[in-house]
Amino acid sequence: MSTTRDNPRTRPAKAPLSRAAVVTAALALVDEIGFAAVTMRRVAQALDTGPASLYVYVSDRDELMAQVYDLALAEVELPGPADGDWRARLESLVGRAVGVLAGHDDLAMVALTGVQTGTNALRLTEEMLRLLREGGIDDAHCAWAADLLDQHVISSALERAGWLRDQRRQEATEQAMILKAERELDSVIEALPPAEFPTLHALRGSLTTTGDSDARAEWKLRVIIDGLLGGAGA
Amino acid sequence: MSTTRDNPRTRPAKAPLSRAAVVTAALALVDEIGFAAVTMRRVAQALDTGPASLYVYVSDRDELMAQVYDLALAEVELPGPADGDWRARLESLVGRAVGVLAGHDDLAMVALTGVQTGTNALRLTEEMLRLLREGGIDDAHCAWAADLLDQHVISSALERAGWLRDQRRQEATEQAMILKAERELDSVIEALPPAEFPTLHALRGSLTTTGDSDARAEWKLRVIIDGLLGGAGA
DNA sequence: ACCTGAACACCGTTCAAGT
DNA sequence: ACCTGAACACCGTTCAAGT
Image: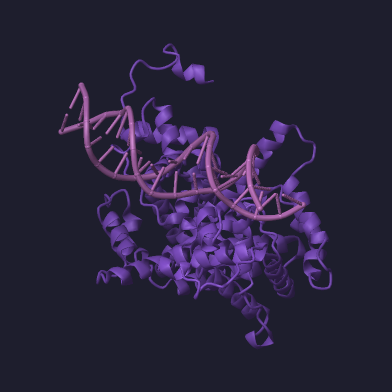
């Protein structure tokens, strides 16, 4: 595989370094080797240069990853009239954001460090707020509601990314044991003293069935929107 | 400060290494220098030993941090009858968990890597599930509800930890400019084309007032519980 | 048998020296 | 003026060699 990179036939004649090229290469690497494994040195290597050269275009690793995060969010298409009323559109928007982010390993971790102010992040926030207002959510609460939905997007994306990673690893090892993590939690609960943990024992079956992470994320989103409409949220 | 550690008068005669000692030292370091800055080497240094010695008691950094996370959760007191009905107790429990975790910098990041199966994490989950059932939440949905509440705890703790960090840094530099991040977001929105981002402009005031992170976390929690009671959650 | 010094294979970031 | 080789100050983890 290293021969492919070095082969002048498969590599473009020139590699005109630029901020966009660095960010694009980093996103491709996230998909290839995973978020945590993307280092400045590896990004540089992918661009056939030294790590020091990257600092001409990005100030540090965190800033680079923030750019990568926003580039990924460009993949999220805003829902249109065909997606239904404001609530259906909001659910579409959130679902797509989760899907896109989960498709780039743990990239959503970037958003945990603070509010993202990239163009695409703002584009999604704008649409989220617009739909919330259309749904009659109080102006005073829209910001908090968007925050809550953002946290849902990030958490669900990370959960789903982890699930996908496990899935892939399982495929690679061809193990028949479906969902190792599931069985692990099951046995942990089983070993707990029933007198102190009666509820965990009673609900053991439903606690360890984590397979349908999609259905769960959608259910959570419905709960949040219901809450926004029903109680203190309005 | 380094003289204090080396001074035999202030240091116990022996340092009997153990798993508990390693975990306790690591938690103290998280509070002192922050989650990201805690390395195996620094933990070893705090215990007057070499980094290799830690691997007798923990298998790697992730496992150590999982232990530290669970040790921190021991600080969370379960609500009692004095805290009110199931809902008031649930809100207390969640609020305390957020407070405790936020008090240890970004330690909550540990919980993003997967379901935590430490004793204290399970103790909190047990109580959460018990209260949800007492509140009449369907058995089939309790696991998902606890998951949603967990995500809220972790997200809110990280948000609050970041806010506390900014606060501390601000005090240290004695800067009068209150909440730099706030003003930054404000100016970003201001610079946005109003035609494309009308809602962000309209809600600019409420979007950039992030000060009361406590009130916001409590509002979000109310929304979630309302949603659990009102709609698809029941 | 248990512990650990020293080493291995990495990091992010800087900056003087080159073009 | 712009770019980058080489270096700096770190990492997590391993393992052979000591006690």
